Image (cartoon, rainbow, N blue to C red; front, side, top):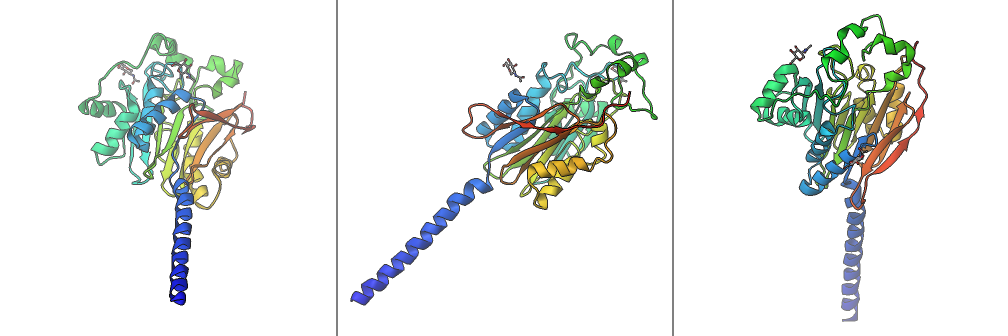
Length: 346
Ligand SMILES: *[C@@H]1O[C@H](CO)[C@@H](O)[C@H](O)[C@H]1NC(C)=O
Ligand SMILES: *[C@@H]1O[C@H](CO)[C@@H](O)[C@H](O)[C@H]1NC(C)=O
């Protein structure tokens, strides 16, 4: 009888220990495997807030990055992203935008698209309503209209730069043998090389949701005074952004004409898949721009599968990543020290 009770007790203890350890395992496992957060390039905290609000409302990482990018497209204080700024040489404002679902690897993108404000939502329609990945130019706007979006002028008077008269093609100095792309007025190239770093502060966002969702969203009005038809890194998958569930995601900003040649977002995610931290991954990816052209400036922000955030930059005076997680009343800004680039050629 006593032996029987002892054996029963031993059994119960074994079960208790097993259950206890399995609970502990779950408690450690759950938050680590399903982090929830929103990050974006630059201190564009209103976009972070908009994205996080959508994440809280719908629980979808894709909804979050779409909402954040929509906020930025409409926010006139974000001259490097929103409508009404950075027209091409002909004075036309256009958008490049991209969404990527890191779980399904679906991508939707639009590039050099005029007349439609909600570019990132059009990118989502490309992803969800067609079998395609990218639509460009006026045909992308036609598609958007078919999807129910409204054509409207993206030029504004208050934007200042957006009228054709102010961005006469005659003041631009393209070509091929020169440092153009982004093209800018010859008059300001000589007097103020620092200008070159204006106008590349595009927004790239990453969101992770509690269901294991991982998404990237990017949008921009493009480089000012670009040749009409120019597309930079923002809308190009692997360049402006990339996401892979179980590994992480990265987004880039800066001199898109250079950045896109190195597929830096893809490179950063590849580095993380080999075990690099987000910061080390961004550094390694940026270091692949070799030799960095004079005046080159670029920045990357990355999130790993555990929700750790890091970044790297070169040539900018400073770079910040805006981060928001559950329980935070406000986004916080993660400062990223930049390594010096080579000065712009005069
Ligand atoms: C965010 O929006 C508020 C107005 O709602 C504005 O005052 C503030 O400047 C914005 N912040 C940024 C960083 O754009
Ligand atoms: C700029 O927009 C105007 C008005 O839509 C159009 O007539 C013109 O062709 C556009 N220019 C370019 C270069 O796309």
